[in-house]
Length: 251
Image (cartoon, rainbow, N blue to C red; front, side):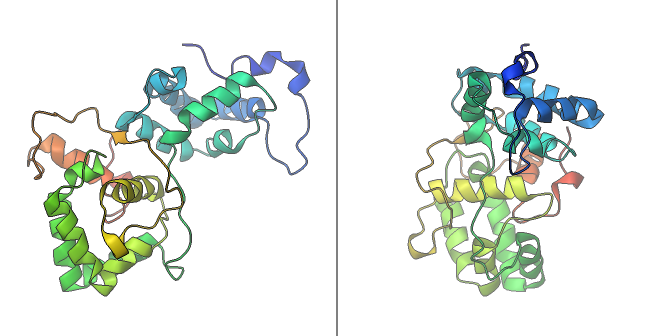
């Protein structure tokens, strides 16, 4: 497979300095290749997100999102997202193509509380914990970016009337589960119209929907099936409200 930055090392005119210390993308790529974990994660990202990078796929399959998260967890991987393309069209095109799959960041309007702490408070509150359990039971298709079912929406509305439940709406995604937390919040904002309690996001015009390639459209039901694959898929997508992903995601 052709690497989207492969041509960068062959372009001497790209040897320019960035005043603010931002890496040029060919430099970031070389650093990634020098780090075994980053090099492996980058190769997996190219394979998982090939359709998006080629422009043949608009939606973001879960394995592409997972590959981006794994790349972001390496030492040099984050630089590939923030690096400067220095007018290289291939690089710019790849960044535009993959941007819809990148987790969004949200404003710090939750009183400074992170979602890990907010989740812990909810689990220690009996009413909030009960609503949280129902949320995990009825919102499987929301985690996959498919739809916000009536039962799921009602569960979220109930949770938002609980003080510690409201914190889960207004908290700031943090920790190792931040990327999936942001994906879940984005799906809630796009799919659940909950009036005055709608989920806060900073990109109201986003149109891209995250999809799970394992979802069977024939089973168009609100409840999540209790088989292993469904439970595993649900577990790996609800990082907003459950323990860190490193313990539940299997690469």
